[in-house]
Image (cartoon, rainbow, N blue to C red; front, side, top):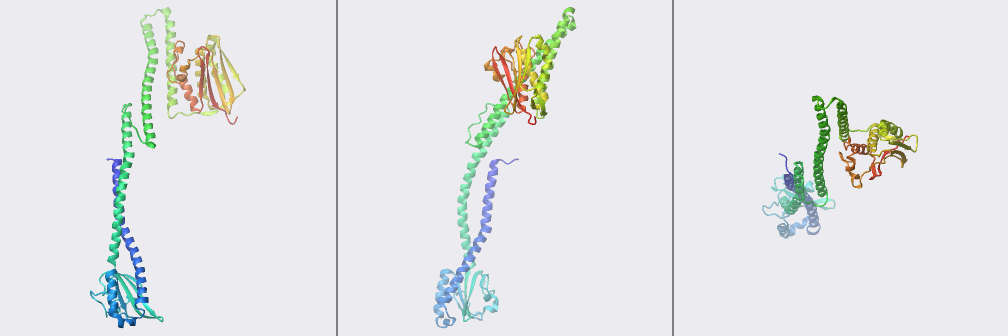
Length: 470
């Protein structure tokens, strides 16, 4: 089972807490204890130096002031827990501030010969005399380069260990306060991150199930607000795509059903002899006309499928747009003659090379010419103009036809869209031609615009990149 964000927060918090406690009670305790030992050794050394300089400048003074010094050192030990030895050069303890038991007259060298050769020792030293761990400092008494004795100061290591534990306890108390704050921060972050994400996830699932009207709610400003807006926008797009899919299927079904119904009806009539012999040719032409409608619709749907597909790629190369226009207009000569329409080509240059997909641009020109001829008035002129401007090549296809109402200009690029004015004239139209034109031009990274006046005519202008090597 996948862990939720909530449990990830809890596990992270517990892991951090455990890690900090373990670190404090291991490495932290050891580091503080070592620091205290070093600090205490320095302090003991300074105290030993003071005793030698101020209290016992000469070891021979012990003979006259032993009892007074013992009382003074005992009081100092009661106050500071520091045990003081005065040791002869041979290693005999001449004075011991400790009384439980007193080690006076003991010969240290018999127990630990290397003891007095050290400056500082941590441990149960001298071995055999001291049974508890001590922090020991040995300060030699020097007179005329001769060692006349030693002052030994010893502090129980437990004292420093307890001090280190006290420090750790204080740090742990502070840590507990910090952990409470961190817990509050984690709680706040959870409700600022996980809770909005859960709501967004729920909304996304609702949208995926088709409940597009599910309210996603309000979110804090920033990334979550943008993400929520993106999810809501995605839901709206899914809704619009769903509507588009339904409309697309309805339109395709309608455009297929109408010619298929005609073909089926006329074919059955021809087959059962309902239509007289002399009328059969007329109905054969009607069937052929409807088949051409179906063929054109199928070709355009396949073209749209290729344009929408991820594998759609332009085969771009330099070509002469003027020559392409001449070739594109040739198949329309018969239709133009039937409607007494002329096509006028206006080229500022004999040759004008552009960079693009030659076959796709020829399809664009054919669709625009087909529209222009279809909606032009008899005895009118269609003008095709090419010109260069700002390193771009512009192509204009202008007719003198019925025009497009102003409120419908933005809709002509929609698939299957037909204006009310075009329905009477557009017998074979599918409403897909201009959609294909726009998608091809935009695939080239260029734009196409329409300028139209109702009852006067329409002009389509699109741009192409000029061939830079030209």
